Image (cartoon, rainbow, N blue to C red):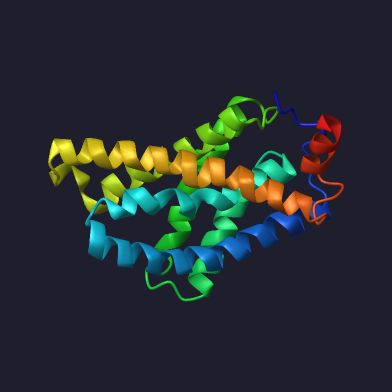
Length: 197
């Protein structure tokens, strides 16, 4: 089990800066990912959104795994949405609501453990929850009720798996890669990794 080594829920200035920086970087990457999705949609069709969706939740997982404080997943996903709007996503301000929904979904998995567990199972659950919350949100926003039941089931299953893989699994890999650079020394991920060594 990967436990939170610092039981304090109070954020340090460095943790805020790191989480915000992760959000800004991924906000820019999210905008670029839209282009990847659009190309894939022309090839694959409507399921491309659900296949590629998990990446739009990865900032929340990276930050939560690095900082390990209540609100890290939510805060970072909202910052990413702000950055995406600021860098010119044509969807506009509605992305802020999208960031809130996805961040809340990811945060729920960590809250369920009282922010004490950050093992792979919880990271996968956080990615799945972010995808689940987003699916409900897009169902309402784009009237998914009008779609064929078989397509809906496929969209839901693919999106949840995408959340687990492209947010949960990839988010952990990115955080560990960042840790290996030494840039996260002194943060919760560093304390945990040193303890495991």
